[in-house]
Length: 350
Image 1 (spheres, helix red, strand yellow):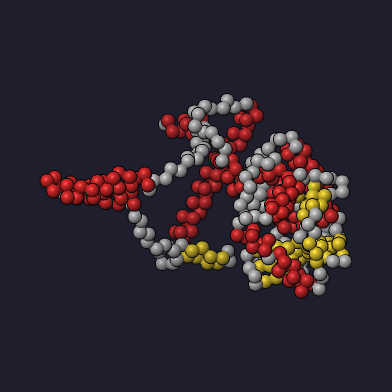
Image 2 (spheres, helix red, strand yellow):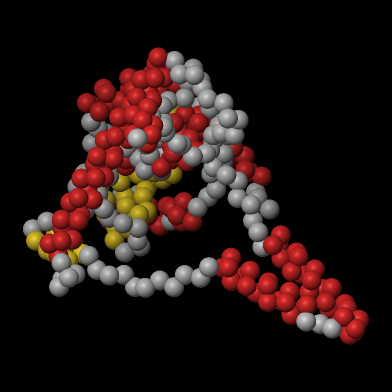
């Protein structure tokens, strides 16, 4: 059973996060994150997002915080303490954060704890080179707390530990505050969702929109006509880009020919190797074949002797009738976009 105090703490944590833009929201709002966007942050603040289940990486990250902080102390000689308060900007109360750690005796030195399985985007130990989403999060914490420095303690795949040192960036702060203010007041508080991006996060959100079965079409306003025109142009550009890409791929394949499996040079390597053969079973056809054979076998039973096997025959017959329902799952249909622009319709009619 869950600890009631832990549940209360979690509820308070989520309530505080909904009451402000947090440092972890900033990368998503700025379009710097793979895991969140302005639209997903908006939905979080408005209470429209379902509660996210705790994934294994999330659980491990939380569980390893104590280990990472001990590694930081061992590497730097600086002791740290947890800071569980929700901190708000002294002037902009709609901007806040939770900190991982502060250095004991030096509260103006804050520490962000990270666990990662890859080192892509991370620089050498002691540098300030961290992935841009982590950099934006830490810069936001520096702005909120007015700390003089933020250290990022990062453990990679339980094999490599590094400490990164970030100083405040006044130019980032000057540009960030107006952007976040606009997002908070003109979107979140106004109840106006920002336009979705092309990220997987927003694609998932938009594709979950109900409807799509009424048969009714929305008459476009002039402003909406412009939006759809952008889609039309984007699709034409994408089609042209795909054509150029396929053409280039075919030329390279021709260069490789039949005597080599690829080509290498200053660009790296391009491999064009034959994949293993794939054995694919048509399970629907196979099941139908077995059903047909079973019913034919039942038909061979002599009617005069059927009473001997009557119970078994009935059971087999009922099993065959029930099998499709037992092993058939209905997956709700999703919404599929089908664009039929005028020039495409005329081309199809020729």
